[in-house]
Amino acid sequence: MLKVVVIGLGRFGATVAADLTRRGAEVLAIDRNIRLVEEAVDRVTVAVGFDAADRQNLEAYDVGTMDVAVVAVGTNFEASVLVTMHCKALGVRTVYAKALTALQADVLQKVGADHIVRPEEDMGLRLAQFLVEEKAVEFVDLPEGYALRRLDVPAAWVGRSLAELKLMGEQRLGIIQIVRAADAEGNRRREPLPHGIAVLQAGDQVDAIGRGADLDRFS
Image 1 (cartoon, rainbow, N blue to C red):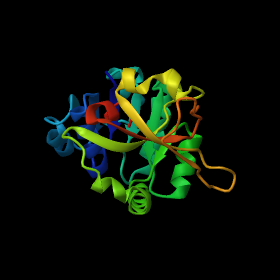
Image 2 (image 1 turned 120 degrees about the vertical axis):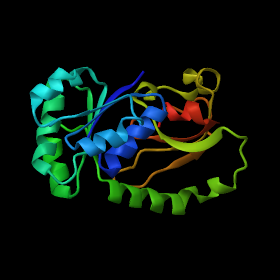
Image 3 (image 1 turned 180 degrees about the horizontal axis):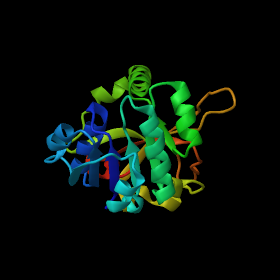
Image 4 (image 1 turned 90 degrees about the horizontal axis):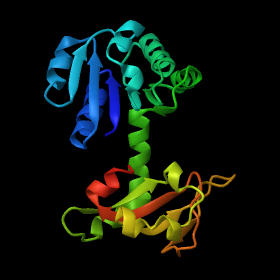
């Protein structure tokens, strides 16, 4: 089971924490605002109220044993920096940190964030991509419980062929297109209906069809 700590329960953090819990993750949700903690308590595994900028508080709840940390602190950027540093120092494998500006993103990466999330910008980019590339998916009539989704290629798939991965047999996923990593000019080549000999590379994405629960494991 994926173990995630979400620090900061504003609109963004609370949504992430609740959805991760719904998808089967073990979620520890933290905020210093008790009202926000009380609102989240029935939607996550554990919700607690304390100042996450204090490393001792994080240690008391074994945050270092988590697989992923989502630092979703709102307007207190100093606290966001401290929490990010503490999570990495305590041994959290992967830290996602929310940034409001490009400068904040740069600072958070420098103090250890593995991934930067800029909610409004990311949603805008995803919407634009959907409108340009994905709209045809709306017209695919799939059985209930199935979906067509674009996935980032996991590290475990890199350097392996589709035939070697046996995705249909072992993961119950059908790959209908490979979107290759961007070249030096930012262009992405597409390989529709790829053969089994196609080898996946770092930065590739795949359009996969399968049960929603199976796709969720790779989203």
